[in-house]
Length: 268
Length: 209
Image 1 (cartoon, rainbow over the protein chains, first blue to last red):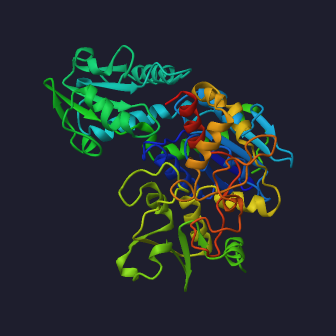
Image 2 (cartoon, rainbow over the protein chains, first blue to last red):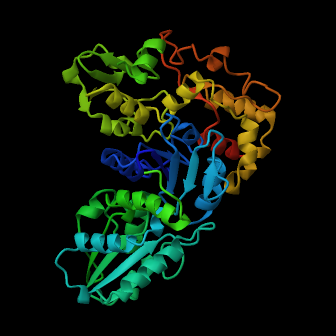
Image 3 (tube, rainbow over the protein chains, first blue to last red):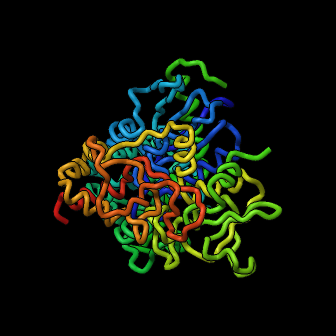
């Protein structure tokens, strides 16, 4: 990919300092790998903005730009906001100078997300017996044109088929099955909860811990105090899946997968 | 060979926004106010960690706008090369060097505020309903260099070519002016289009919030 650029697109936030941090970290990791001639990130609600991204990759050596949304799923942002702001006309957009911008699937669509969810579950609850454990994947639910709930259901089904845990469940913050009902939804002595989000923030630091019944814990402490003894169970609570460093490799794979899916010759 | 980044500093001055670039054996970045302080007084960062400096102000409040005039003090970024220093500046003022280079090549297209607002969908669609008078007041308050944003505005209010706000001084639109008001030679932080924060503020005005 020596003549290719990579643009990682994140949502960002005007109130949450942690929202964009994983995207920046993934960008730096991919830059260090040297896999692309130029690696940039851009955000809807932070800087550099999506509009600023139109100014990147103008050094003259970049012929193809792969745009990878650092989003859990397709939805309003990947289908409406990102194409509009960076002026994409479809999967392939040719700029006036001849540069080609390729719009890839969001990182959450990568098949290996399933493995990362399992890796995260193992790391947060090392040494526990999976046969006595329920894995709960928690997503937001009920957001405008948001398919993250669909993606979370898909991941749960894939993990369930592997037969590793006593049970694997979906739960949501704002629609049933509610994460607040986790004690009723599960019956095993161990429960592992992994937030299906791109970044840590108010949802993973505060909202979900409160819904789980943790009253004293906020910010970083909530991840360091595993297991939490609640309702007579051992509850293990993980960081948002998108903070996993391996996500950087998934982003690169989304770019590689684009050419395979569209049967285009890579410039590498 | 002198890098493009060094050429930029030579041309405009070794200051960018609230950041000073010091040249000794290598490059060192500091807050402009901290230039004369002893290095041992300042917390040392690598270029890779520059986003941590940009993220919070002196009071540890999150900075949603990186070009706001509230960059924290008390740090220095020791860089190993011009590329390293450039990467640090890109994290302190994301996208601004790219805008400057496009402008220098006469390739920086600007987008009028009305065009930005009219393009919005979803929750921001209502922002297009803001009156010209309300926009004049909003931009005058939101984008002002003393307390709002240190960018130099290049966009217009609408297709008529009207200034974004009559409440802002002429200097706010002049790339040669040091928006920190120190009257020094500085790399301008060019603004080619209203940011999402201004769009969000216009939405709030439209909703009567």
